[in-house]
Image (tube, rainbow, N blue to C red):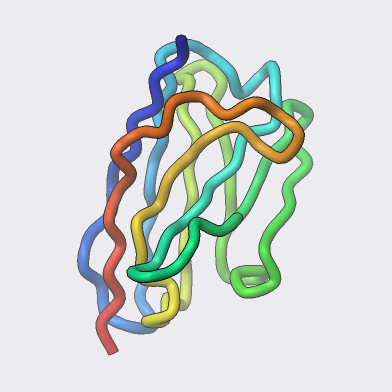
Length: 116
């Protein structure tokens, strides 16, 4: 079973940048579409961005133009670079399989807090 470990979240000021990482216990990024999700307090988990095994990316409208998803297959790692952060980006960020694929067990996520 694949294990996912997210890291890199922290407290940042509005307008700042942050990169979060997701390490998988085996290289799934060259096999299936992987994605970032986030969950704000009191809200459901939502899609943020995805990347196919061929490198095609997709983004939620709310982050398009500000966030960039990428992966390094050699390191079994996926990244999410977040620019121009705003308080609405606050939440726990998770990585997992993309739409249409069976989810792996969810990791603990990484907390991103954007102060105004």
